[in-house]
Image 1 (spheres, rainbow, N blue to C red):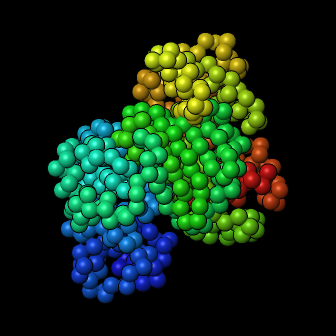
Image 2: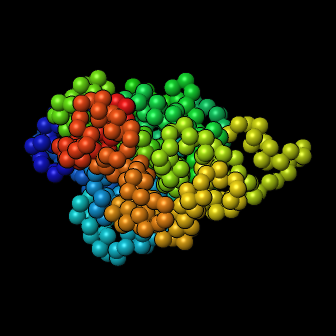
Image 3: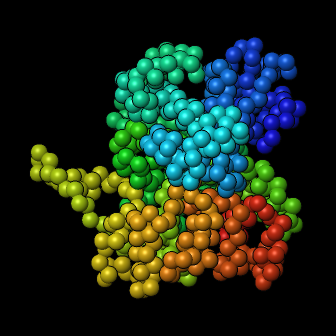
Length: 490
């Protein structure tokens, strides 16, 4: 979205929540910045500035509004649409790459110099990578302050700050309050619900068709990894530092998330991956408006507004699912994947004081765990894959490419280059590469026109399945969302 003053001001004056996350409103007379939907009195034109990011507003010396909490707004949907360097950089920053690897690590992942990357981000976001990461650290710190009983020093390092002093200075600058004052102002007792357990709200732009999301995930749920029960999706997570678990419950205006983290430094990447999984940063009104312009899709859009594209928390997991799912039913693929998961071997089994191993304790609790790693898959014997030899070799070739660094399935990967490298691997064809582009890399404009279920869905809606690709040109840039609707129609 271009920062057109009149358009932005109209959105603020109407308190239009569809624009939350697209831009931020700076009020120079009060020294704060807000969401466009902030319920406060609309500021005068001469006192307003608009910023493309919270970091840019902070760089201008403004603090976050305590009423509308702009740092908790949904992310901008343009990072899903855009596959350029800035879009990739924003996805990687959200995943915590700057906190873990610094700006040099981010620049190396993107293939640019630090100076050029800073220039590009500054031009479009009004802030460089350090400032963007700092704004995210401030938000992580606020969540930990308000939802845990951790000491401030623990929170400082868990949020990614290099020192307690840096943490204190940043929180004071962004929120105009000391960290202890934020906790006091929150005004509620912090329940002792377990070390490393954090409950927060994940905002989204309405509408959200939660039933369709949970249906899709439940049909493909793998025992021991994920489950859908009583309107809540639960799964294990593989995170940068240690494993974790999450429970996600769609509610009115937000998704309630309860995270159990072994290492609190994984909070920001865990939140980013959960948002990506449920496609919470999408702009459903823009998507639905485009698809509803086609008379064949209009009734489905009217009946089920806010359909999202279920994405992934783990690119490797999604790639294995795609390979195993080639030319077989969802149920058959699920059975094969469950058999593969049963080969999991824990290399670290530690005896406890009562003689019960850590793995036994894990099994007794019934915890959900992340999917197999590429290294674990490479260690599975031939006879335990439970699939045809060519498919087994394709899975192994994929795992080897990731271990060797020849393939990147992270959210900031180059979509075109990743597709090219996938197609170069034995056993991976266009359907698999496109499925991964849609679900692992978040490409919103993928049509799986050769998929049998897609053809059935097209026929059910009266679409010309033999020339579906040509017909689907009118659905750009949202063909991934049309794909989900065609699956549902089937």
